[in-house]
Amino acid sequence: MKEGKLNHQLQHQNGHLSPFKFAKLLDPEASWDKDQLGDVLHWIRQAMGLVFGLLWGAFPVVGGFWFILFLVLSSGIIYGYYSVILKVDEEEFGGHGSLLQEGLFASTTLFLLSWILVYSLAHF
Image (cartoon, rainbow, N blue to C red; front, side):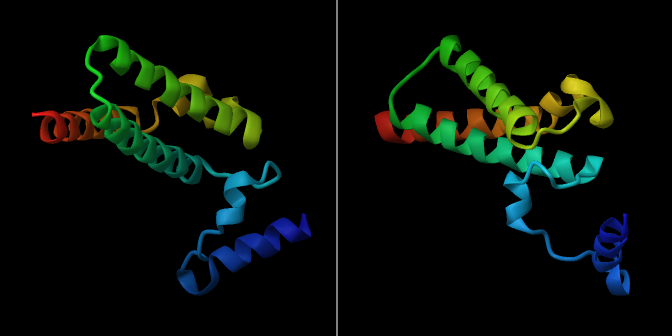
């Protein structure tokens, strides 16, 4: 209990939050609040949307299958990250639906934008 209070005090020292530690991203023992975990899942999804969009555009693939594959891969990676790596109790964060939806629409938009742009520029 004392350690938790110390961490909380360090985070709120001088009214500012302490810098985010990247080691926390892979630590199953780390404590997460809803906003922190939501932000991390959001930005992981954005990175995946960009990477998959660039890959799909560079290799001339078209069709709904590839769009569905992105959604399945993106959601599978997010699910694996918070359930297997972080081992968080999803009920504390609003359930699987809430966690899987975090950043989904923005990453889908980024995915489609990068896929269409790279495909059009590279293959036309």
